[in-house]
Image (cartoon, rainbow, N blue to C red; front, side, top):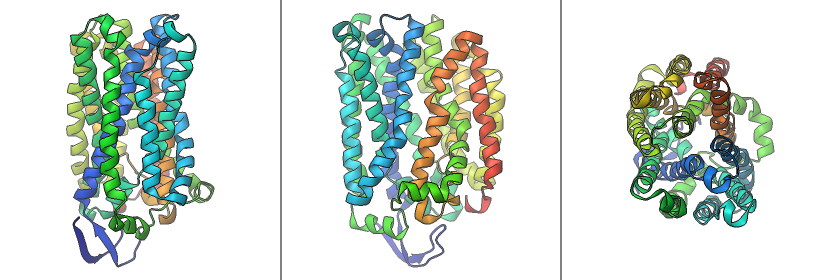
Length: 436
């Protein structure tokens, strides 16, 4: 593994003599890890719309069953901070390798268990409890899967390319969505409805398990080597006690959780919610809409890459602020496009993914530079947990409730609230352009 031997200055450490990791090597591990996590995420998200309401809640109407499914969907985001607390303890006592192996083993077990989930017709209400248990286990595992590689990447990025390297971890989201949507579109489009709901929907969960195994070895290759272990130590990317971290960085953690709320809310407004709306209230084929989502995700990849170049020119705060304002404007008209047929749906998704890419591409660790170095690793993990919980955990449920009771345009209210919180948090944070 290539290692530069010349003394370097840490981004915020002000100390000489640290070894410098190759950002390209770290980026590969980050992309593999994030893509696997988001693939798991989207496999479950798609199934929560087109499979679980029928499999687990057949006694309810399609709408009510989907709302129940979205309530269970949120359990992972509630469990995720608990997972961070649990696995940070394991990290302190036994090291990052042990933490990652246990977390990804739990994630793989929970994911593959969903592939064997019996329906309500077979075991009654126990199917609901098993679904909830597996979803909560996924959340615990995601909390433990925080590996610090994104922070290590930021610390080793050239000063003039920090925006470029900040966007690298975010590429995993659209890449994971593309693969998950393609799998579901293939099985749903080539099987009879009976076969798909009997066994076809289960195959993406088996694929998710296989991808987790590959991702585990790729990430262990990064964090388990003596060279990278010393880099984690020398850069103070070691887990601090949760209580100490909250006591010293609680204010910045909360600001950091709200700073990316616009992009995290939009995240589900262009992925899970529109699929549910189209599936429930239009005659559009879910397979065709999954293809539209894949097209939108390609635009999202391009926008994430562009966010790195733009941030390096104008600064991360300016880009995040500008994209939050654009998302607020988008929230006022875009949801109506979901009722405008295939063309309207495509416009909704393409514009939404472009805005998502520009904002989400720079949302990771936007406030990390405000953390004291000794707490950065743990504080960054907690910040990510809180941002996903507040911004995304209840987004599909809230948006669908608003849309069904007040009209689809009302779903934009949730997105607007996220944009306003982002603008306020960025103003409050004093995020310095010089450290972006």
